[in-house]
Structure formats: C-alpha cells, structure tokens
Length: 208
Image (cartoon, rainbow, N blue to C red; front, side, top):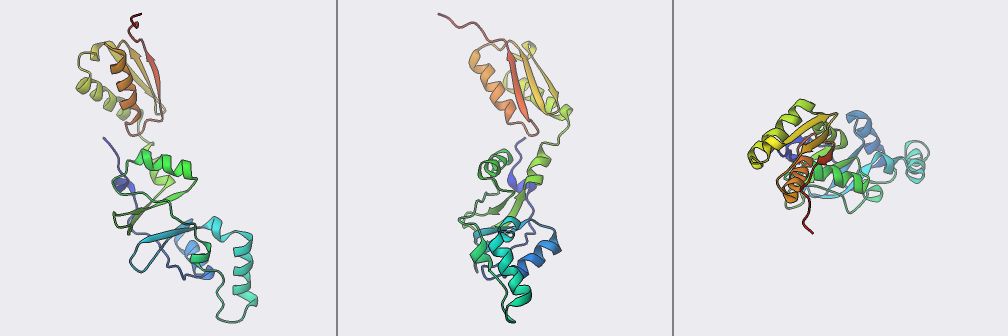
C-alpha cells in the first residue's frame, strides 16, 4: 500500500491573492486557525507562501501595527506579495507521502501546497497530515510486511521473520542471497507507518 499526497491532502484551502493586506491575513489566521496560506495569481497558480513566521517578522509587525493604529485611513500594511516566500515549495497529488515528508524536512516547512501539472492549487498537506500516516498499528504493519515477504520472497519466507514495535521493523532470518535481503529491507522501509528498519538478517557468506 502506497499512500499518496492525494489520499491525505485537504482540498478546501485558505489562499490569498498577492494584494492581500497584513490586516486581512492576520484576520484569516485567527478565523481559520491555520499557520499560513498559499498565494495564488488570477489563474489559481501558486506563486508563493505566507506563513505566520513571515507575518511575525519585526518589520511586518511594525508596519501592521501602523496600519491598525497610527497610519492614515486606508493604509493596510504590507501585502502578501511583499511578505511571501518564493518560489514556493510545492508537491503534486501523485507524490508518495514519505517523499512529501522528506521535502518538508529538507526545506523546513510546515505545509506544502499541492498543485496540478499547470501549477494550479488543488490542495494542501500539513505536517499533521503526513504524520498521521505513521500512526498505524504495529500489527497492521507486520501483516503487510509478512504479505510482502510471502508474495515477493516465497522461497525465503520460511527462513525469514519480522517483528514491529512502535513502527520500528526488525527483520531476522537467512535470505537466499544478499541482494534479496537488501531488497526486502528496502521495500519494508516503504511500507506506510514504518518509522525505521533494523536489519538483523544473516547474509550468506561472500565468496572470496
């Protein structure tokens, strides 16, 4: 089972246009309890992302305070276009969840706008959405790996065993070849819910 971004993403996305003001964005953060928004153009394409961190920079806060209190009427502070991070870090509906998680980690972002092949916004995926995939019972993970072993390593099945605790898989036994053992370890890592794999396999001695 491969979990895709399309399986976990939220399709009702709070997005803003480039001209959205500090005051408008602050109100949206409060109203929808989100931590940021994609910024989209008139065609619905994602051109940037504004996070609560962007809004909380000293410069943005100072300008926003002026807009809310001391500036002349009609002044609304900095806009989304001025505060957004760009180019945006995005993903696609067909991306594996584990790859989306890796992208979030590497780019140090809390959310990924999901775009189609034209760059238009179709959803958003958050860290919580991704982590929910890993909240899977150990029994389910073990069952899936046993099925994997039975299906793809039938000759080795009786010589292999698997245990799972807190999402960590431990593989033991004697694979027929080193390459088959490495393949099993690799495929086990990609089973949804797996946090890590301990390779305790006894590999055949290499010929000298």
